[in-house]
Length: 316
Image (cartoon, rainbow, N blue to C red):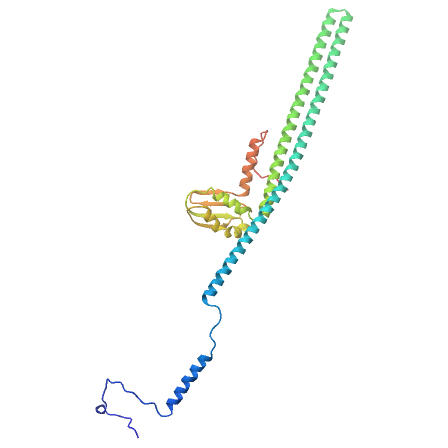
């Protein structure tokens, strides 16, 4: 039996390699396992699928195709939006034309009525004047027929007084007719201005509520007025918040030197409008503000002196 326990003096340390023989029966078994593993590797089929480069190229081709489809969808959406805007503008133009024709008809009717009143007043004045003249002649003839100087002078004086009274009455009638004519024309002009402003409000309201890209156009126009660098806050209606946020990158490209653009909702901003907050102040591009400016310009160029309004026109 082999010795298993050794004393320290019985063990010698050697730096030379020692080769141990494989026990009998174990060598053939190990070699057989190696041969089986090699055979299994040879029987395993090699990978025939796409390579990493093939997958990369396929992904790039898919990305390019997606970009083309995305661009096509964007262009189609823009074309559709432009068509809708053109249709809305055409409808608005027809509505404005119809209302303008209606306003002109109202004015013509008012002018005709004023002319009729003046003509009637002139006719009455002429009748009064003729009656006065006839009364004067009658009094004069009666005075002459009486043959009395005192009676004749009294008749002349009474006739002259009656004529003067009738002439003054005729002048008063003419003055009232002229004032009535001016009043009718002024009221007609005011109605026309109110009608134009009401049409503008209704058309702009319909377009701003039905065309989603109106707010984007408003923001772009307002951003073009921005001067300076720094952060910008765009305040819009809650219904326009999502669409405006989607175009932040486009807005940043539009303005040079802007570090950051933030879009927030503001209940004081109506649909389609916006307010731009910058380091240098505020740009008010709300629809209501633009309409107020339009009203002021129309009132300035109108042929009558219209009073400034403290409240918007009734849009019913």
